Image (cartoon, rainbow, N blue to C red; front, top):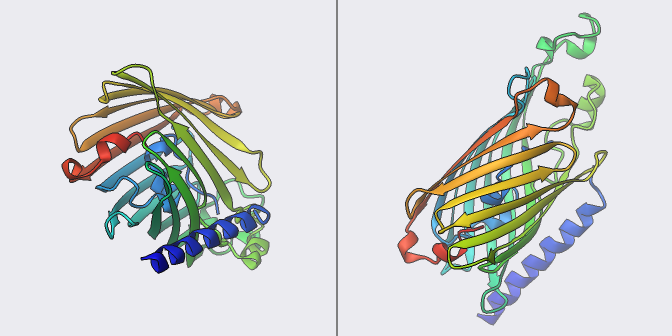
Length: 315
């Protein structure tokens, strides 16, 4: 048993060192979720199995409604804990669209979980996936010239993806760091030169944390934040506060630095079923060209009565 725990600790330390190394080499555009706190599997592979029950999630996001070519993202995932809650696995399928750019893919996640205190668990996770990346360059409107050789053909390629993450949580607190994809999985250097496109391969680094503060028996305050770092772009943060009422209904407000104010609401419809909705009001100059962003979340969990999900479902 001690040998296994030592092996797991080595894995966690290795993931940590790789994440730190990547912090200096940020150089793939990741989908954005306003309800990130309920879609952590899409941000950090170390989250796999954290809720202990088998969890099935569906996310649908329509960003900047009314703006032609605006981002649209659909994500479907499932994960659960295994090996007596000492490990977890997950799978995510996604479809991401932005203008003439489209990406479909699948990610497989695995995580190791170590209890470091009575209530604290630290997890290290890896994800492996395949992405089908396409750019419909021949249908780009308002090209400088229709005879530009950069637009003679489209891109359509399958590429691998690898993600890393660390995640720590108790019943009332969580913190994580992750890189969903450390590879240049969209355009190669040759493709960038050939197409004239720039800043396609920037890695995304996510820092997340949150805490539950009981106000009284029926009201709980849950502030959280997600910080996103991308080379060539300002650091962006989502600052969020949710209020849970009777563990059944949640309302919240978020601020995305320099970009949007977000209102959100959730309902725990049954012990197993949860619905969430968020609406983004754009603050940047894009506000004159769109009608906000909509995001829908559906989660169903199997076997709640046999797990500790009730006490940890805030994350």
